[in-house]
Length: 102
Image (tube, rainbow, N blue to C red; front, top):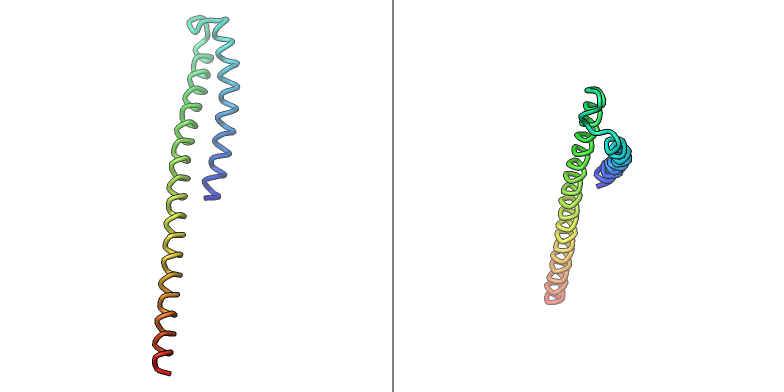
């Protein structure tokens, strides 16, 4: 879960940086239509957009992983509770048997 949290934080940072860059690029492109930009500039803009979408996808996958970890943890809690209840029941049965023997 901690690893997923670190991945989440890192991806959020990447997305935030990419959003800032995309906002600035959108402002530039608004003033200078894409057709007027050099091929290098177009490639850079497209690369940043692809990176942004890749980080969004990563964030989605990390979110799913965190949800899976939460479910696993809840299942383990239920399992631990059931084990403890069974153990207490066994102890109670043993005490009952010992009481009957005495």
